[in-house]
Length: 235
Image 1 (cartoon, rainbow, N blue to C red):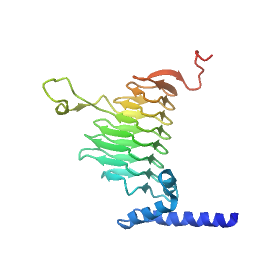
Image 2 (spheres, one colour):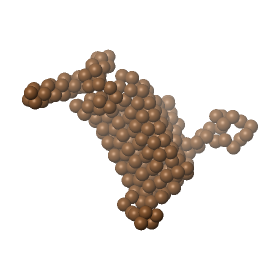
Image 3 (cartoon, rainbow, N blue to C red):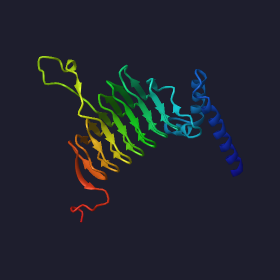
Image 4 (cartoon, helix red, strand yellow):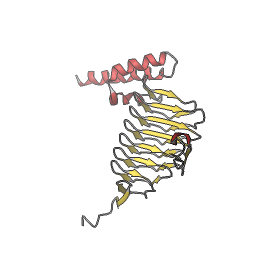
């Protein structure tokens, strides 16, 4: 019986691989992706569709308008993801095996770009905006739901004019180095670099650079200790 199950599993993988090989084909691609989805199930069950071939899985329910979109092998673009480039926006680059989960928005304009390194997962409901400055995220980064990245802010000093008419400015790009973990609902603001292996607690607002391997929490985020070092409060 186990032999039959192994053959059935092998046959299923072969069928999925063939279907995904046709996924980039206009018109036909949408149909075969729908069929492949029906064979594997909902939501994260569909991640297998990004693994069975070199072709990325792009949900038919994702919205993409970005001429300079570059996808690595095995990318996973979930239902309800939006990737949108304004006419003056830069590029969007997703490395191999990047996952964008449902409701996430990637938007570029005013010369800004968004680059995400290999094996990084962006969970549901995140917002990444590359305007004036860019957002660069390294490899193996874990981003919890509802995180936001904004490398710009609005001008607002002129009280005689509506804020929306005063333009935007940027203090610099946002950079997350490799192996960073952001908790639920973290906001990362303009000009911030978060060092390799840092951990940012849920709900934090990051306004200044965070060193490598630091653990930071709060509004604004402050470092409470460094990974691998025993806190004096716990000693």
